[in-house]
Each structure stands twice: as C-alpha cells, then as structure tokens.
Length: 169
Image (cartoon, rainbow, N blue to C red):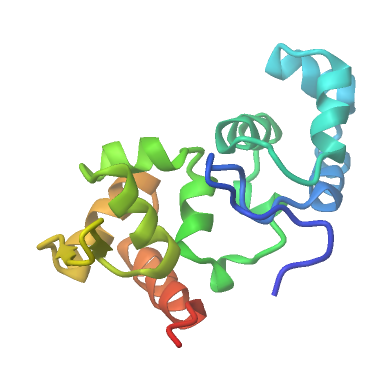
C-alpha cells in the first residue's frame, strides 16, 4: 500500500506514511524553495531541508504547518491516498497527536489508541477482563470527523479499512 521510505505511525504520534519524495515535489510545485518555506514557517532553511529528508519522526503538527504554508492538504505528502486512508492517517492529516485526538474525542489515551489501531472499542484490563466504551460506530465517526476536520463518510470508510487491515487471528 505505502511506498518505500515511508514513516510508520509511532506511539508518540509521528506522521504516518510521510513521503519526503512527495513533500519535495509539492515544494517544487509551489514555486517556493527551502528558504521561502523556511521564512513562511519561521524556521531555518536547514530545518526545512531536514523535514524534506526525514523518513520518520515528523510530528503531525509540523507536517500540517508545512502543508498549510504550501497551500496543500497533508494527504499530498503521504504515501497513502485518501481512498486508502486508515484512521491514523486522518488523525495525522489533521495535525493532531494521539493524545490531542483522544482529548478531542473525550476518550482515555489507551482506548483511543486501540480504536485508532484496530477500529475496536474494547480495551483489555490488567485483570484480563475487557471493558467497552458505550458509543456506537456512528457516534465515534461523528466525533472523529469533528476532531479531524473531515467528513463523517471519510471516517466511516477509514474505520472499515482499519478493521480490514487488523490481523484478528
């Protein structure tokens, strides 16, 4: 699905599937160079060059700021297209960390991580019992759409793809 050189979403909430190649293409297409983008972002040109060459570890907020300055949607610099996006991609494209998304959806961080990671609302406790959040898929998708600034249908589709991608065996 994703291209070589991509980032993987990290526990700290790094930008999922960031593509430096696609960022460099977007930068060229914008007519800006590293110095021009650096001025827009109020960082050094060296920082922009570092962003352009990093393969992982970029925070969603940093990528969102870069994309806003270039006038593009963050999905443009992602190796995964919108029609293949998982929940993690929608969160990253909104510029949020997992903690921020959990707070926006009024969920505990661990429970949000489970939902984002596998599309499931159950959480295994230390004693082996499962606890469930009593929100329907519709409620979760509606909340996520508000927090991620996207459409409910996009979250619903990403939720299904997340579930489909989860190895339940």
